[in-house]
Amino acid sequence: MRNIQTRQRVGFTRNTLVLTVIVSAMTLSVASASSTSQPGGVPEKVQAAAAEASAGSATEVKIDNFAFTPGVVTVKAGTEVTWINHDDIPHTVDSTQGKFKSAALDTDDKFKFRFTEPGEYPFYCRMHPKMTGKVIVQP
Ligand SMILES: [Cu+2]
Image (cartoon, rainbow, N blue to C red):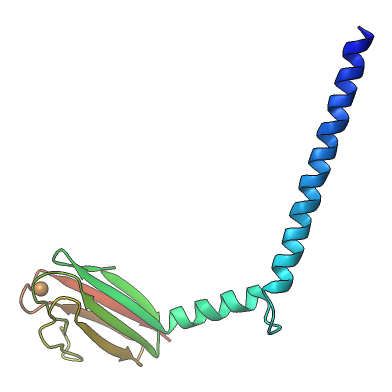
């Protein structure tokens, strides 16, 4: 009985030690990660915010399998939207309001348009008029 109790206690102590080592190792790696991530004095959170901001000023619409994806994009005024054709056949991007009109886009071709005025801008493919989409521009 005594022996078992002693063994259990030893086991408990060893587990605690291992746990302590793991926790301190984690603390160390977290500490070193946060210190190496800001060599230029830019905290991670600021970098993430900057990435979000730049993502908001450029948006991509993929043309794939006879569809615009996403079909509806909402962007801030001033955002440049890029359409890229991933299909093996040509498509176009035409504003139904005559605001923009792409050439025939071959595979991997891109068309870009910067939306400066808030509003709704429906578009379609003039080769396949059932392919439609819309850009919503917010102030
Ligand atoms: Cu098309």
